[in-house]
Length: 447
Image (cartoon, rainbow, N blue to C red; front, side, top):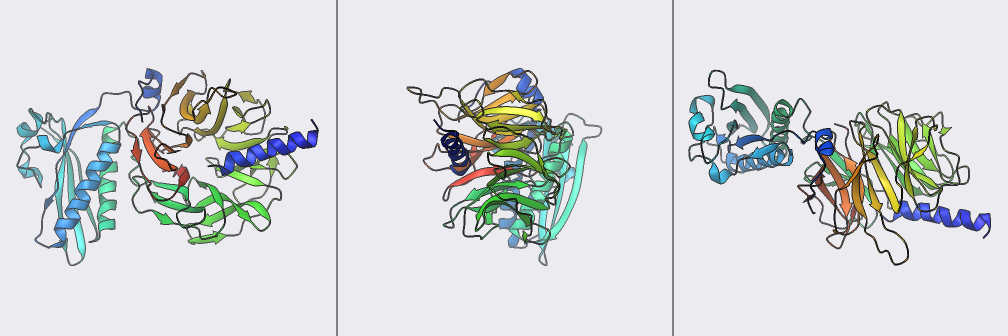
C-alpha cells in the first residue's frame, strides 16, 4: 500500500471524524468527590415567591420567576429539593412571615428555605429574596438580596438565575453556580450548519452566524468576548472568529490547508488541528492568530486538542498514529506525549475545570463482529481510572464540562436525531435541551 494512499485514507478519517457530527450509573467515590458531588445534599425548600403589587403583569412574571428558580436549584445537583406538594399552605413573602417549625418539620423537613416577593410597577420589576437556615433560630438569615430590572420575562429569568447562583455559591462550597452561563453549538435547523447559542438550561436559543456554509466546533474564549470555530470557506477550512463585543465576525489570519477544532487555553492561546504541512497535526497560536507553533509532528492524523483548563500546561488530543483513534496527552510545548486509552475507538476529549478529569467518547469494542457503542467515559488523568457515564443510549459524543465542574453537556442520537443533553458529572440527571433539527458539538462558557 503506497504512502500516498495511506495518507489519503488517514486524512479522510480525520475529516469524517470532525464532520460527522440515560441511564444513571453508580459512580466511584473518587469521581463524586472530584466533581464536588460527594457531599451530603442540603434539604432545601424553594417557596413560590409572592406578589407584592397588584399589577396584572405579576401573574406571568411570577410564574416565570418561580419556574426558573426551581429549575435552577433542581439542576444544581447539590440539593435535595423539597417537592412543592409538601410545602405548607402559607408561604412567606418576607422574613416576618416565616414559620420555621412548619418548614423544618415533616413532611417538608427542610433545613434551608428560599423565599421572597416580586412586584411590577411602571414597567419595572423589583424582587426581594432571602435564604434562611431553619435550624438557626437565633440568626437564620444566610442571604438577603434585592434586584430591579425591566418588567420583562427575560429580565425576570435573569434575576432568578442570579438569585439561584447566590444560593448555590453559599451552600455549594463557594463554587459559582452556572445558571448565568451560556452554551454554544452547531445546528442545521436553518438549512445550513451554523453556530447557535442558548442559556445553560436550553432557553433563548438563537442563531449567531449566517454564513450559508458548514461551521463546526464553536469554542468560547475564557473571557467570553470571542468565539472561535472552523468553517468551510472559499479558500478551504479555516478558523474564523466572532466578536461578542462587536456582535459580528472579525478578521482572523488564514493558515492554508485544512484547519479544524480550535481550543482556547486559560490564558487565551488557541490550539487547533491543521494540515498546512501535509498531515493533520496540532498547532498553537496566540489569541490574535500570530506566533504559530507546531506541537506534533507525526503521520497521525492528530486532531481535537483540548487544554488543561486549570493549568494550561497540558493538551489532550486524538491521534490515529497507531491505527484507530486514541486519546493522548502532551505538555503544552508538545513534549512528553502519552497515550491514555488502550483500545477501541476514542475521540472528543474535554478537560474538566479542576484539571483532574478527561471526558470523551469511547467505543471500547471496535472491529469486525464487534458493533460496539459510542458511550461517554470519564477518566482520572493521573491514575487512568475510568467510569462509563452513558449506557445503551445511541451514539454519544462531544462531551464538554460546565464551568462548575459538576455537569457535562453532550450530543446524543438516542432520539433518532442528534440532540444536545446535559447530565451531572456522575452520569445522573440527564436532560434534553434541543429538539429542532440536528444539534451537535456543544461548548460551555468558562463562567
